[in-house]
Length: 158
Image 1 (tube, rainbow, N blue to C red):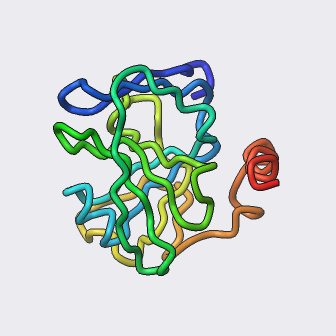
Image 2 (cartoon, rainbow, N blue to C red):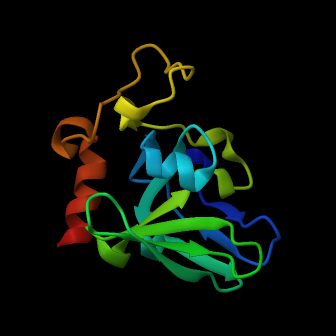
């Protein structure tokens, strides 16, 4: 995956365009019911990346606060015209860590989940690849993330 980056993406109408300048820290395939509802699909693919690695090229997304089951909430950054969600900020990390919607990249073929989370609510017809890391709820980053990702997270959270 690292050879693919930087990579560009944007909203459906093209008003908001962005570039991610490095490979994601970690990529979630999230099967929670909120991601299903908000994405309109069986799961969402979110690429975690330092916000300073997300370069806005065109437009200005608007922040839409959305409650979450954790109570910490998230701010979904959406195109003001077509309302495509391009990335989110979750309450725990604030605006230091962006969760880029991998489906908004121009070429989505290079971003696969490193782990599938909240599989307890996975649709029964979704089959995960054999041997793919998957957890019923969430995971312990120290156990699941590679050392480089852990270093990036530590630097980010200071």
